[in-house]
Amino acid sequence: MSDCLFCKIIAGDIPADKIYEDDDVLAFHDIGAQAPHHFLVIPKKHIATLNDVDDAALVGKLTLTATNIAKELGFSDDGYRVVMNCNEQGGQTVYHIHLHCLGGRQLSWPPG
Ligand code: 5GP
Ligand code: ZN
Image (tube, protein in one colour):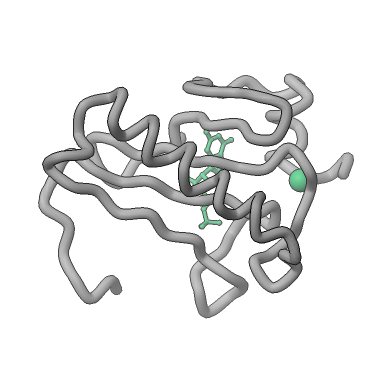
């Protein structure tokens, strides 16, 4: 999608601090980090919201990519959170699905 921010990052038209990339997914640091570790994992295929997902394997791959990175960056044993925001009341601001992974500090619950 030509007007999608994350599609532009995938295409290399907008720079990002990339962590991992393969044929299906891209992981990069969030520009507005809310924790010492905060990265996003996105599918290379444009999917606007979680409501549009019909590929269980792809969502599983987003999750496993995040956990593998958390292990590699060394904060998996301390703990972390993965979250996907959906639509307005879920707090979604970029309409290309993305999994947030946050760690490196004590996270509170419930979220705001
Ligand atoms: P959402 O609110 O849609 O769940 O999350 C969107 C996330 O994308 C936010 O955490 C925001 O900081 C991040 N973000 C927005 N624009 C950019 C950008 O240009 N580069 C990077 N790396 N992250 C971005
Ligand atoms: Zn997109």
